[in-house]
Image 1 (cartoon, rainbow, N blue to C red):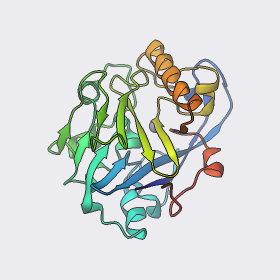
Image 2 (cartoon, helix red, strand yellow):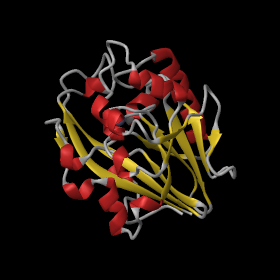
Image 3 (cartoon, helix red, strand yellow):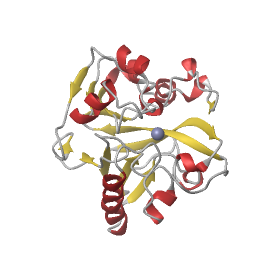
Image 4 (tube, rainbow, N blue to C red):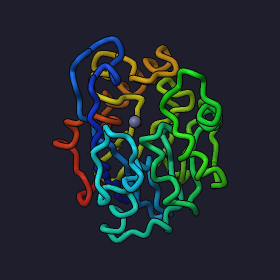
Length: 247
Ligand SMILES: [Zn+2]
């Protein structure tokens, strides 16, 4: 079993307060866009899909065609058509841009997240209706509520509830034979400061639940798991980035 971390490019935000509300005003920040591939004996799993580099409309994005997840997979010798499951931590646009690259996969998205994205409240700014519409006819496995969802029923890839950043946000625990437990937090923790200072991430649906999710993730870290945050730039220095991998 292997876990690959893909570097999907950068976004340049004018203000770190987008990720740490009510603080860090006026501090510009560059954030990475991560996505992941898990090569499990019983099938390939993609976690988050980044942005579609060929259709990147937002001027804050710095992405190249080579960053697109299907091309990164092909360079490693994997066929995107072989992907069995795509887990989306949530449906914000920087995680859903590559959904249509996997039309034959089963998408694992929280039931509440699908509904929140399809009929967002007026203040929600993170969802992209074009992305969602293009994937409307796909196959969705919709774990309900707070239940953990064990993808292969062997404890190796477990999706668990971390709602708060969005209504149906989930994180993914990957348990590897040699590297041990690695947690893909998604945007439950966007930058390290969310975790160290218990500051809810930006564009937050429910701050209280976001802080509860952070506490759950901190517990996993304290019990030995490696946490990979959604948009922490310094991780590019410390993580194994594809073609390197965790096993
Ligand atoms: Zn994000």
